[in-house]
Length: 244
Image (cartoon, rainbow, N blue to C red; front, top):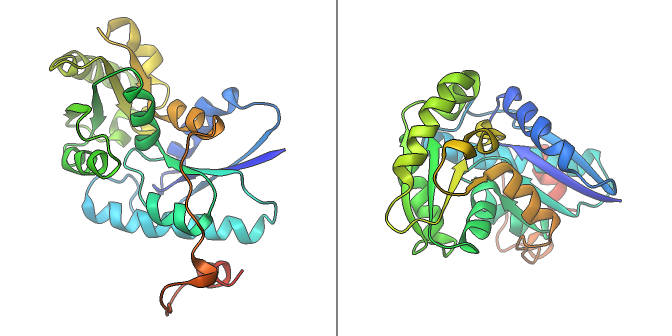
């Protein structure tokens, strides 16, 4: 039995529930999956500041689960399109780790140049930067953001279909061959929108799960036992995990 951890770095439990509803039916029978929600930070990450706090919250969520669940993890999925704490968590956990954005980029790049459609206007430069850092900058041709945040889209499915459908049509340009529908709150919408979208759609939540289960998620060597510098003022969870 393989154990996977899926972390929602937002504090919105409804987003975690949405991820569960979409992903659990796709789980193999030999997989045990634990979902957890950030205990502090923004209800829905929508700016640089909330993203920075979510990175810390994501590490705390991972550390807390490590302490209460002694069974080793086979991998971790960061349930946010933006992947807060991706590099840090990969380094700390020494198991395969990916996020909704990275996993979607991996899948989309196998098809060709891609675009992203997501909620929240402030996400555009953040996603662009992440794509460059992950080596997908040249393949990401366009980012189409809509004014409502992912949380607002999640709360109003009828508005979301109309708003996201138009955004997908706008994103189908500049040589784009596939469109990523990015966001934990938008999990499940790609299937509903595919009939009105002129290009193939990738659901970022499904992509995250598939990349993790198919062993496509990168991993890094654990550094904690030979840490580069002393840490002070950490939470009990992170302090204990650091000394395991």
